[in-house]
Length: 175
Image (cartoon, rainbow, N blue to C red; front, side, top):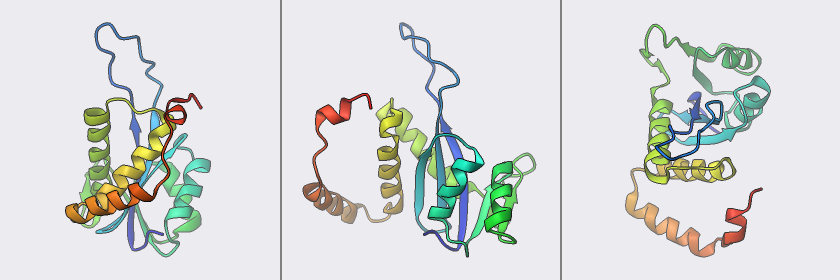
């Protein structure tokens, strides 16, 4: 569980504009990722179906300690959830006025989202909703170990040799 000061926010991965010769992409197709990060600590990225209270609240309960201090933007969903769980330990930053007020900000989680989007749009180009959880886990793993590159490589190789193979048929299946 994440403890201490925890920033939480959601981001939307939207399809890029279609290039010449590509079929039209619907504008309402968006994948939502909920991010939670401890200040100076671990990151959790979780794909969710929508940014509604009934979807976000169980994820926050699962990953954030009730003793933590929650910092979010002005989205009303977080205010309602915080009244139930983090009474007196919820700080809100109003992005229409400022992006930081002393120690109250969501810049750390925005940084993680920036790296996620840069990786998805720049390296992987197209990510299906079916595999979005895998990409979120990979980026969380890499972000949490960003200071230990050599150790991360050997740990990754160790885990790859112990893990189960993902068959091509399962990888390319519709559901």
